[in-house]
Image 1 (cartoon, rainbow, N blue to C red):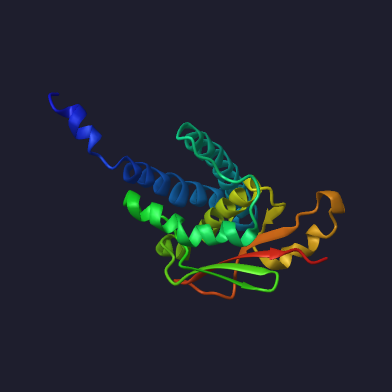
Image 2 (image 1 turned 60 degrees about the vertical axis):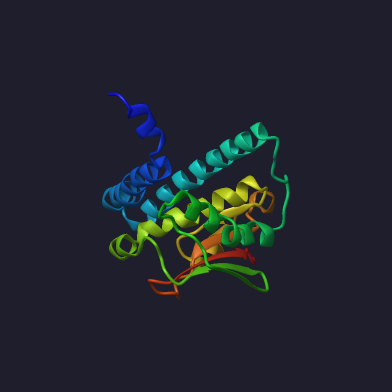
Length: 196
């Protein structure tokens, strides 16, 4: 066992945990949800679990930044948050040496904010199982909620109409969904103001 500690210190643990995430979430959770409860209910369950997990991770990020004497602003605008996803998130994923979906471009058209990539990192899994897209949708929804935005993830934008029936005080301000008009391997995530 001599040298084991030194060897373990050189391991890229982010890559090890990413392999766990890929097999547990991208393949396992999404596949189980689809087979057990179907596409619609499965999408909602996966997105809710990922949203909750991303919110907890965001709390841990704030804790770690505080230990380093740093912090995040409590309130930022939507463009800043989504711009960060393009500019900074890609750098941190690259620095860790892991495969995780990153967005190559942010753009805005009126009340529609879009994160885009030409290459879905989970392409093969997403072709087999549409619930894989719930992971990116739920992750983004959770991040936005932690920044104080009132958002609701959706499998399809046509479901937004039902949110207009929710009392105004509880109604989300934004909806988050994968653009169904963009075919794989490209992907567009949309954050759009809810119109009632």
